[in-house]
Length: 308
Ligand SMILES: O=C(O)c1[nH]c(=O)[nH]c(=O)c1Cl
Image (tube, rainbow, N blue to C red):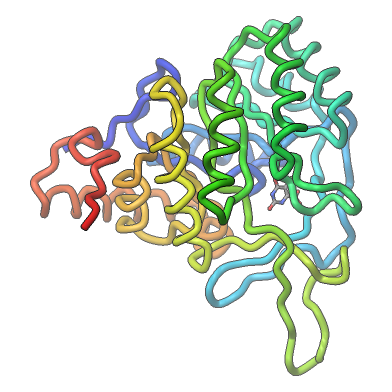
């Protein structure tokens, strides 16, 4: 049995990645990922043109069924992550980038186009935690405008990180936009935006920014993540890969994401709960499921979810 997967031409021995934002902000964290077994590829924290401190603490809170975060896009800045990915990579790496405005996104990607970096990049269109900023990918026309301008000059591998959608017509609309562009992949889902958790004993919220509203992750978002992977796989051109993110806590969840069509699967909240050893456990559990079912490779069952 092999867990081999393909990352834009690079063969990975595991389909598992870290979710951008989790354990991938500092050089130490990135080096940890580079040495994590059964992590097939790694993704950097979304980088902005200028370094950012992010939102005030508390900004991450663990819940029994997941997590809530309002980090506020803290990162060491685009130059740091560009330097990192230009170094010799021990593990295939996706550079994640974000911007607080369409203009900044264009500026950053023009610099990236002119740089020596030839690897995969993921444009985050879905951060829910910037005070006063909407999640861009909920505005289909704005997303179309940004991608139209980006692909007027950008010729290197580029994918997008999407927020969850909750309406089949919205799946149709975003897929109609994305299918117009030579994207390498979509990564779905980002956290479920603007959830709220209440501390009953203290009678207060648990994160500081935005009055306690923050992005939800972990097992509670698995059905939404599976729906978005499935719906986008059904609608996007085969040339656009689907990276499934959201709600993975077990090998069964990885299996479900792949059954829905995911080429690769990211894990975020469960890394915060369990540590980087979670990748060994997930790989082992996935192999056991495949053995039990008689599957030799991920391609044997990828996208083969049956309807009734
Ligand atoms: O608050 C964050 O940094 C953050 N948090 C998320 O849950 N998703 C994102 O894309 C980002 Cl950029």
